[in-house]
Amino acid sequence: MRVLSLPSMRRRPWPRRQVDCLVRCPLHTRLFLDAAGQLANNPSIQGEAWRVLLLLLSLVDGENRAVVPTAELAARLTVPRQNIWPAMTQLAQAGCLRRVSPGTYQVSPQAASRRHEAREDGPQPHYLRLWQTDALRQLAADETLHASDLRLFGKVLSAMRWSNVVRILPPQWGQEMGVARQTVGRSLKVLLAKGVLMPDFRGRPDHYTLSFQYGYRGHMRYLSRLRRQEHALHQLQRLAGEA
Image 1: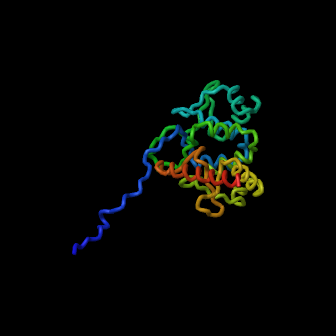
Image 2: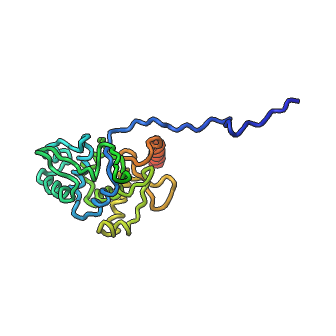
Image 3: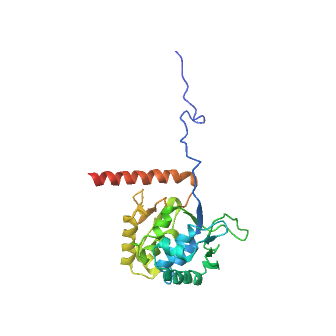
C-alpha cells in the first residue's frame, strides 16, 4: 500500500491570495490633515472660501500654483465674481493662499503639496491624496451645498483614517467647529445623500467611509478593494430601489 505524505505547511499547496499591486493613480494633491483641521475649525472660513480652495487644489501644478482668472473661477463655481475676492481674503488671512500675480495663486506648502518631499527636520506629516478630477470640481461648484456642508467636508478630510474611514461624533465636532450638533447632523445627512460619504462597510457605529472618487488615504494597493466595496454598495442600493 502506498502511503501519501501530507503537504508541507511551508510549501503552501494552495495559491496565495493575490493583491493588486499596480493601481492607476490619478493626479492628486497631498492635503495635510492638520492644516485641513485648522481650516475646518476656523469659523471665518465659510462656504465660498471652501469652494475656492477645493477648486484651486484641483488645479494646482507642481509648484502649488493655479493659473486661473477671477472671472473663470466665478464661472466654474457659478458664483458672482464679487464673491471671489472676500473668499480669497479669508484664505490669505488664514495663511493658506497668496496671490502671485493677476490670475495666478499659490497654495501654501504647509497646507497642501503637489510634490512628495521628504522632510529632514521631522517626520512626514499625515496627508490625504485629494484627486484632481472633475468629481472634486463638481463638488466645489454644487450650489445645493451650504457653508456648513462644505465645512463638514473639510473636517472629514482632516479626520481621515486609513482606507478612507472616518469617525464622526456630532457633539464633539460641533464644539470644535463652533456650530450646533444639529448642524453637524444635518450636514452629515446631506453628504450621505450625495454619496460623498457612505456607511462604514464593517457596520461600526459613528463610522463612515469617504468615496474614493474624491480622495484616498492608505496604501495604493488597497484602493481597488475600496472601489469594489463602493461598487457593491451602489449595486445593493440600486436593487433595493427597484424592489
